[in-house]
Length: 540
Picture 1 (cartoon, rainbow, N blue to C red):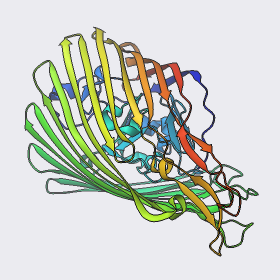
Picture 2: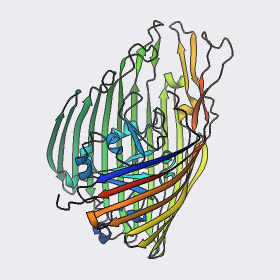
Picture 3: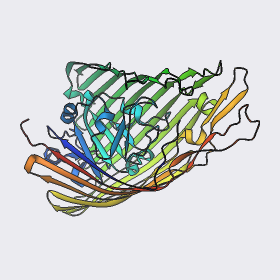
Picture 4: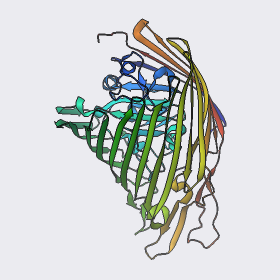
C-alpha cells in the first residue's frame, strides 16, 4: 500500500455535469408503502436509495444524478468507472495497478477508493480485503445488465453506514421480465479491446430467470504492464410468490486478471495478478398493508487475491500481498406511512467481515470485524410546499467502537417545478483492518527477519465529515430539461495518513522504520456543482 498524496488544508472546487438523456428515466415496478401507481407514472423520477424510501427526485435529502439505461447505452462507456466520469464531482482511474479501476467523489482517495459506498441491488460491494475499496465491486456487473444508476453526491452514512462517507452509487439491475430470450454482443477494437457477452432469459411458472456471461479486456496503457481481462457470470431470479410477496435470488462470480509493475523498478516487479470474487444474495419483500412494507435481505460474498513475485536482489525472497476475505450481511427494513403527512423507514443490519492474509497481517488466523447498525428516517410534510427529511444511523464496530450519523434536510417547493433545499449531515469512516492491524514482514529463506515495512499499532480513530449544503432543483418545459445546483461545505477531520517510526536496533537484520496509520490532515472542501439534463428531441 502506498501513501495517499498530500492533502491541502483548504480547497475550492467547481464541477459541471452536462448530460443529454435520450429517453425518460426508468423507475421500479414494485410499489412501496406511501407511494401509489400514479407516483411512478408522473414525469418526476422516483429515487429509491437516498433515504431507503421511494421519493420524488425534488424531495430527496440531497443531490442525485440518475443515469438510465438509454443514456448508459448512448454514452459509449465500456465499464462503470468510465461512466461515472460524467457525474459532477466524480473522478475515475482506469488503471488496474492497485486493484481495479476506481472512482471517487471530490478526489479524496489514495490507492484505494474506500470513502464511497457502491451498492448493486442493495448489496454493498466494497472489498474488505482491499481496505474498503469499491474498485472490484465496480467491475462486478456488466453495463448491459443495468437498468439505472442512482448517484447521491454527498455523505449518506445515515442510510448505509460507514463506507458511505462521501457518496453512494446505487446500481439497479434489469428485472428478469425485461430480459427474456437470447442476446449476444461482440466488441473489438484497437489496443487489444475484446469484449463479448451472451445473455439468456427464461420463465419457469411465476419466476423469471436471467443468466449473463461476459468477458472484457484490453492491453492497458501503452508502455505499461497494464493488460487486463475481466470475466463475469451473473444470475438473477425473480419469483412473484403472491400478489403481496416476492422473492429474488442473485448470484455471481467475477475474476480479474491484470498485469502490474514497472520495468526496471525492483520494488515493483513486472508480474501477473488475479482476483476472484463470488456472491449470493436473497431478498424477500412483502406488503403487510396498503401503508406498510417489510423487506429482509441476506448476502454472502467471498474474495481472493493472488499477487506474488520474486524479489530479484535476494534469491528465495518474494513480494507477496495475497490473501482472502469474506463477509455476511443480514438486513431487515420496515417502511410505513403513518398518515398523509408522515412516512418513515427503520431497520437494522448485522454484518461480519473476515480477512485472512499471512503476508499482510503476519498471521494465518482470520481477523474478524462485526458491524451492528440501527437506522431510521422520517419524512414530514409540514405543509404542501415544505418537506422535512430527518434520519440517523447508530453503528457499532468491534474494532473502532460506536458512532452516530445524523442528517437533517428541508425541501421547499417554491413553485411546482422549482425546489430549494438546505441541510446538513455528519458521517464517519472507521479505519480498515489493515490500518489497525497491518503487519508486513520479510523473512530470508533461512527464517531470519530481514525487515518490517508495515506495523500498525491501532492508534487511529474514525474519519469524520460534516457536510453543509444548499441546493436547487428545477424542471423546464423548454428542451424538456432540468437543472440541479449543489453548493457544499465539507469539513473532513482526521483523515487516515501513513507515518513511519523507528524500531529498536536489532529487531531485524536491516534497520526498519515501518509505516503506521494515524489520524492526519483535517481540511475543508467548498464548491459548486451544476448538472443540466435535457431531452430536446422527444421522439429520438
